Length: 212
Ligand code: AMP
Image (cartoon, rainbow, N blue to C red; front, side, top):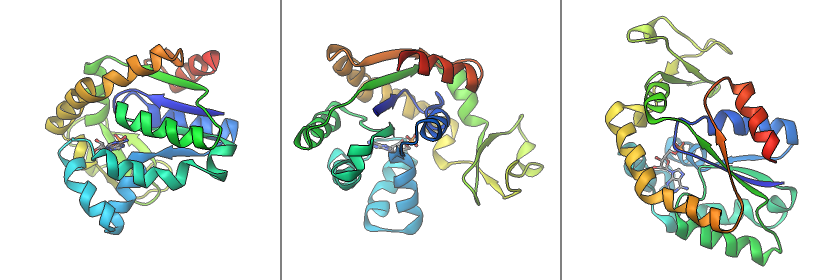
């Protein structure tokens, strides 16, 4: 199964992708996670990507395509995958299609998760990530950071630099301008399925499964 999960940051793509990856036993590939780990490790790519990420802009297409080439072709693509955060632009989608075609493969479904912008802003400003295990949790309001630790491992929580309110607004704007055309691109190909992303994680998961 080869699936693309779409939607702005904060629609719950990562959470749903992790669940689906377990359920269907296919790898979850998140370009945001790969870029964050490259940036943490201080690699050449990580250094180049960092300033774009911290200001809420997209990392240039050529860097992303190079980064994904190895991960999405050959034996990796054969088993299937769940893509989270890629492709983000029509150019990435076209290059990706070419990569798959050369391996005789295609995409099964593009799941477009939709959530209201006000809900997204609240979710992202309250989102915290565990420094130790990467688990995502949420705080219940201002000042809660000091009291809370990771519910899974007790590790320290941090707020992603791009979950700052100014950067969130920029990311939503970038999504509308640059990544929205992708929705039309996949709609024309008959691959796009809209799913309401509000409500419990389980409810959203059921809606996704119903369109697979
Ligand atoms: P995410 O974790 O998907 O919200 O991604 C975090 C940031 O990483 C984005 O705001 C972009 O700066 C960068 N990024 C992730 N995936 C891509 C992509 N496919 N193309 C360009 N930039 C990306």
